[in-house]
Length: 392
Image (cartoon, rainbow, N blue to C red; front, side, top):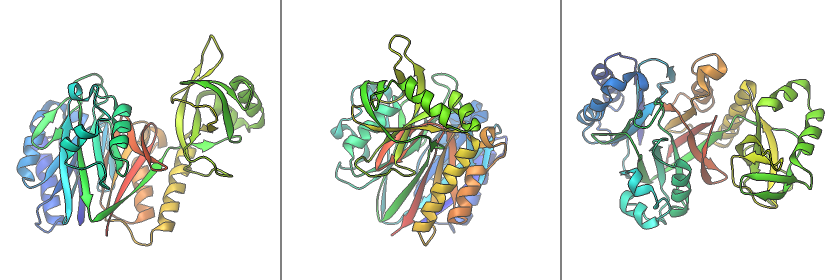
């Protein structure tokens, strides 16, 4: 198994394809690529329609999928707000690579139908597979899609990112083989002799203590440990240092424990969701997740430094548990990260490559990132999701 990343900032898309084709061909030592993940910047929108055909001509033996991005990542570079085309290519002996697509009409009531997905992907529900998916956010209910794939493939790892760069329906491009699409989802199902590890850096840190949901209804949180949320937050506010008090006013999130029954909860045990505000009629806290009675929760804060620290902690933990570097990695990073958050380019890519070694790395900036927390995949925001591939 050999992975290669390449990137071009050529203004002309045909020139960009030729640049990444040549770089990939040399790095693969003339072996044909079996897989190509392609990420194209929104600044190439006028010529998107020819890109799949150009890629198919450049890599005729490969299964090709990809999408548009508000920025692209390749060869250790994060290119934002400029023309770019990034590829992750691979030769994958003894690995099955199956490309699949689904349009909005098909998905409307079939997100969790196992037979539908087995027919599309060629992978059975009992297979230990890796799904890499690129939904269009304007036409595909990404959360229903991910929940459906979780249900259809309980042993699979589902990763990916929502296409970005567009402002309305039809503005994004999805790439599948030699075809350009503007809606639905495209993806790959991989199975065989390899392993995939995932890192999901949600960019948050907990404050206060874990508590129980004692009254809720759907997205409405009425009571925490028998108290109104406003009472809990007022007490929490007074206990925090000044910097955290400022953050609580505009950067408050809720962490939901994914594996309960523990005596303590550690970094990575929480699924972080938005706190959307207070319901004016009930004073309930509105949370971007379905809640349930008895659930363990903890409030979280997010800012630039927390995002840095969170990613580094996740990378350090990964490096400590893996003595050899992976063969390649794909990075799905939120549009709200990158230089707009950190003030510098290449932050997450540099941190990743410093931690795991100078491996091939490619990806893009997403409208939502897809990756597992405690073994179950979700759609995230403000997150960096990394899929790291290892030979067995």
